[in-house]
Image (cartoon, rainbow, N blue to C red; front, side, top):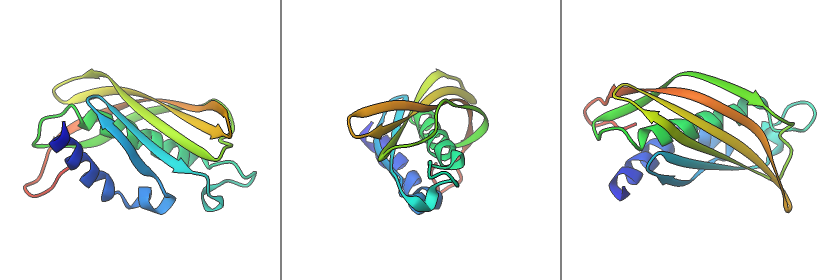
Length: 144
């Protein structure tokens, strides 16, 4: 998994949206990925909560990299569909999105994920996602 994890980190680092919002890839394992994001005012909506688009972005990426972790080496991954339920306002100091593979197929992989907000000692689920990821053949010299 260490070679695969390095490829996944390389792919994550090319996602300029993750750098823009300040997200980091915290951990990667077979069928699992965790992305963390600190609170920042510049990615909030009008009430000061983390914007739903930002919550969705980290959830989608966590699910995508969970799926990618189980794909053959010559693969690339692309989201083809997702459903997000926003469970509570995204209020906290830190947000963690965890994606997990539910069923890995040859072409399509079904994933689920959860975004948790942390405020001091308190943790609360702010979103859940179900997403389908598609395996693409990687172009020579590219990954992810």
